[in-house]
Length: 334
Image 1 (tube, rainbow, N blue to C red):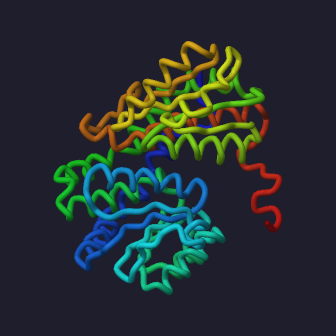
Image 2 (cartoon, rainbow, N blue to C red):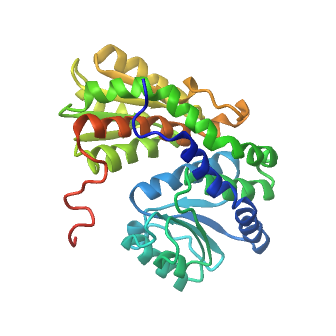
């Protein structure tokens, strides 16, 4: 059966658009390390922040480097009291003009912070503010920019000796993720068929996949498909949300290969006893040709994103509701 909205060659080409900038990205990382820093700050908005959050997670788990991840809107109300002129901030925005992110960038600039941005469009507002910018255009996955950038910073600071091999293997990432999409499509098609009309959904994840569970719920199911969804992290699930499980409550669990996997397994064991509509998507089930097993725990977010994209591509066909339709988002002032 052919896959809808799937172009393997384009996926691979899009990966190359980012990987071909490896030397530039690594040079920026080297400059950051050589100039020194007292804080690495990840700040953006919405799904862009969720894309950045796993990199703060990896820094915390792989090093003792000072790191914070704060939503741009919250940054502007005082949610980070560690910013100095030795801080380095990382921002991302597909449009390059997200209001809250631009406002935060301008404020950080006034504090003397060095700013790095990954943006989808050339000559954007965000690019004009930042010291260093990578324009990824149609390149995907966007996370590849940060695997190279943050991986290199960790390597140069003595926290990721295997980085050169990891970075070399990332050349295969786009191809590997295309294979993940093919492996996942049948399950994702059935999921979309079975649950596209559910009145209420619970999405759960932990660690480096909690941002994925949160952003997929909000940015795809809610924003793009208008499907009512609640997201909760695996450890927090047991502090309230567990009471909502019944036989007919659609529950979706994302299992990471990272250090918090036991939290997901705990949810899986409980949910399997209390709902007949439990679906588990586990990154461990998908082969990654060209990627060594030792690096898989770092790649759960992009593997899961590839899997979930197959839900998105199928569900918009089944519901006849394009992923691009919006009623309010960027349609009016708010």
